[in-house]
Image (cartoon, helix red, strand yellow):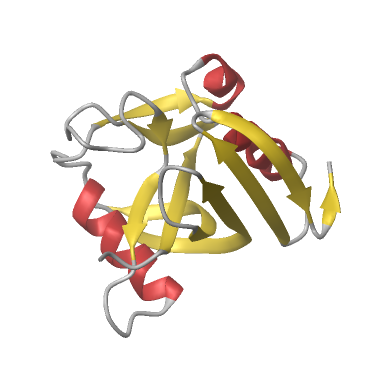
Length: 156
């Protein structure tokens, strides 16, 4: 079984996020959704090691400046609980390569909410926009419906 700990990164440039449209893998819980880049921890990896490896594997980029913005707990009736370390990055080097998991595109930050994204993702996008201090966000889904939202221990 894969680790239930993951990283997710939104790489930023000129008012845009690098996002992945998840259309290439069949049994993908994010199928047809738009997400950042990242993935599951491998044995003995720290969050930073996982972040840098996953970004490199999925995009071909090397992050030069990144920061941990929050931890998100995803609970669902369809898959195991996932603990995700959410990062943003604003400096990188390299060229974007081919990705096996989806199509990579630069998306204007103000159009992100119009894309097919998870309902809970809208909450953390707002927190990122507001430059919120480090946060803990718990999101519980039944199917694709968001039924519980808890920010820093308080229901929202």
